[in-house]
Length: 195
Image 1 (cartoon, rainbow, N blue to C red):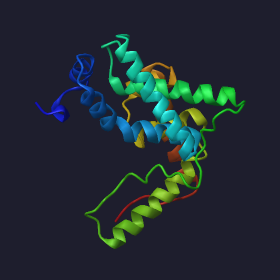
Image 2 (image 1 turned 30 degrees about the vertical axis):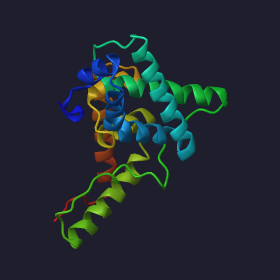
Image 3 (image 1 turned 135 degrees about the vertical axis):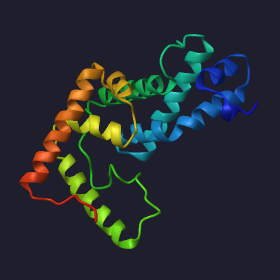
């Protein structure tokens, strides 16, 4: 059977039984989301790569020692490890991570629409630029949930696990974030409608 067809649990069991390619498949499956999450936190390519490698070294060692718990999903567990390594880095360097966006970071960079014509693309780019500016003004907890949901495509359970809050709290932060965005859109009289 092709490794790419196996579930995360099947890949972990295959790796434990000695199939080295199984862990490679797991890493490839989640590489982009884990790296993007780390980079979003540290805003430095080399540092993000180092923490990414440390994350998967820790993942591999934990699985090899038989300490990985089959309950829950693999990705939230890996993201939690990455999150803890980011916090460790900032503690050691006496700097706390900043959640605010930068000019280089765009929550909507990953949204593509190949079917649209040029006029629609220009309109949607303007909408995304307006939204990006507005999201920067949200409180950090609301901004973080919106970015995790929209940029990382994380479920509310995954967001709750990552931020150490209940699912209801993460849902509430998303709701208040969207309410605040709506208020800002109305106050600034911004049209977000695409023709």
